[in-house]
Image 1 (tube, rainbow, N blue to C red):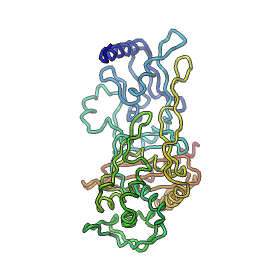
Image 2: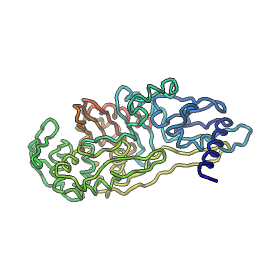
Image 3: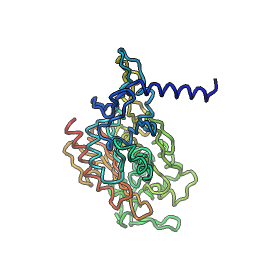
Image 4: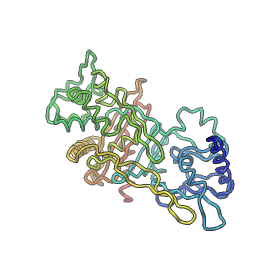
Length: 416
């Protein structure tokens, strides 16, 4: 039988299942239904069509399946049941629905994203992207949704962008591993690299500074100087240790980033050292980098699918926590954590629940606007959560995200 014939047979069987079976529900980690179908062949219903659409995707009789509804379709559409009722398996996510709705409420009026990970396991607790679309009016609004650039792509995991100074976490690893952190450099507010003058944010000059001061002040001059001393190969190795420039398959998507210094000029290397240049990365991968620091160098694989259970109560799919990479030794990770704590204090982040380790970034987009970032984890001495937020195409700076990030920690640690 030809491949085309096999495909047609499979499509016919799929169509039969969709007519005869009640599509399985998608539940949050606490059993709250966030997507469900009430009868065989019936329409899909959603808890909050806007808050969850960036990763749920959609299931439509007209436009087909997308996102999780497509990735996990084989489980949702059909499974053995002990009774006459035909229904697909129910899929439980690692997402906390209440947290997701709360985070969406904080981000809904801007363009950007917010990611919350369990620091120890890699479970994705929240994954917000704005602006978004309403799943409950998908078919009526289809033309408008498709005309809006990037609306169907999640800013959290499908849209890699310039990171700005949050990328200094990567450069910090190279500085520390090569024992350049104790040397002081003179920061005059600018550095000339092959005839190009590159300045600190606002042209600030910090004088004689070491690694800790360079990190807390987020001195571009310091990180350029150290990066040029290290050279392309050592910075390239640091990036690759965090899997930058590689495709990373996850259970619900594949992460993409761009990072290469192999043929880069000194100017490109200098720009890369403070997160400009040609490097682009997603907030979810930056959360993985922060999580590696929080875990003493151990990067865990983020996952969204907890389990799928069929009508008989049998688990037909189960997610698991996995080590993805050993990025650095614990001593290096602890030193980065310590300077992130000092940076968090400088942003005015509360220590009510323990110190928040953080790094901001303000990446210039070349059109007069910025990508504002905040990468964080808390409590710093016993990390439980990683939060990364970004705001795209804004005139704001990274520090302006502090109230949002702090409010998320308050909710998580109050309830936890």
